[in-house]
Image 1 (spheres, rainbow, N blue to C red):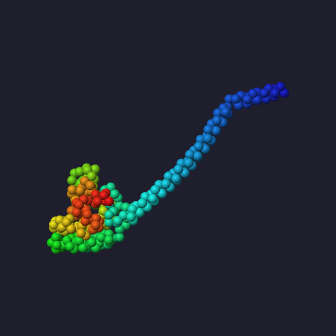
Image 2: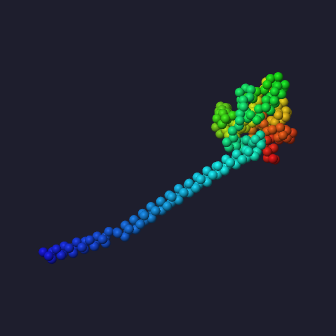
Image 3: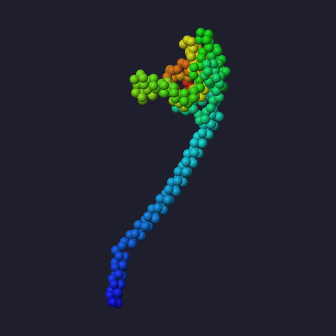
Length: 255
């Protein structure tokens, strides 16, 4: 009986030893160690990426703030009447003109109201004795967008593709955010006779305005001739631009 028990005990011990030898304890330990290392690496990388993103966002925020400050400083240092807005130069950040209403309901920057009304009053003689009308003054972003959309639709109806229509429209309408009308210093003027435009082109400089888009400067301004569009720049600048036969872009480039 005792011999049998001893034999059973020895057999069980032998079986346990064999099981320990067969079960891959070493590989299990290695795998567990690898898992721990991977988890630690993921936590470390995630924390580093989060810190990097926070730093990047902070830098971008500072850059935007600095850019806005530069725009505002430029506006403060630059003569307000010589702000350049065209296809390549957007409206300065946070530009908010103080508007006043002119005859007909349109609005303009209040600083050009007096010279504008004086010019229109003097132009009556060339307009069959009638006061010329400002048909377009200051425009909001939404209004400028609608004008652009309408012009594109017009060219589409003529059979142009979407890309062709957009390209043609940009010759006549400024992109929203790039229109002089949005700064309140430009006006479109209509009259009873075409002779009005000859008078304006010859006399507008006396009141501080320029014929903004002459046909022979379209390659510089990027806009086809608009005999109705006049921009206030001040008498001094307007006089030089008129006498030299240059456009605003040329004048400011020299300055």
